[in-house]
Amino acid sequence: MRTDDQPTGPAATAPYRFAEQHTPPAAQRVSEVAQTTFEHVYEVDPRLMQTHVLQQVFPNWDTLRIMRSRHDHLAWMHRHFAEKVVTGSELLAEIEAEATDVRDPQQSTADTGSISGPGAR
Image (cartoon, rainbow, N blue to C red):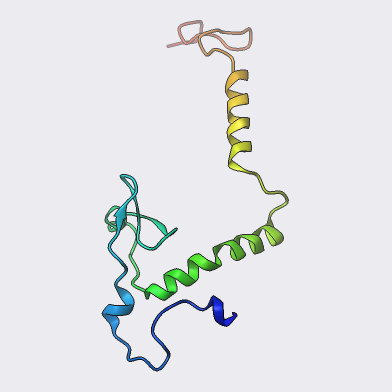
């Protein structure tokens, strides 16, 4: 990691203060289920995850380190595991195309009978 890529924070010789390094800035609500603390860091509202997901406490600099490296990690995953990368717009177009091709469920065909036809109980 280059020196100019280093997360900002106290110098290595600065005293360690738990509250300074583990208390993120005040969260701002983005939607009913999401919030943001640092710029470009969106997260699920922790109150919604208290029952099933144990919340971990880690320093602010680690949150920023993870967010700065997310594109590198995603690129690595694509290089090693993806045969092709599909965009969200491609997926939506495919879903919309399939929705227009689907037959009307009210119409019956020769191989499917209505629920009130022979064999219905």
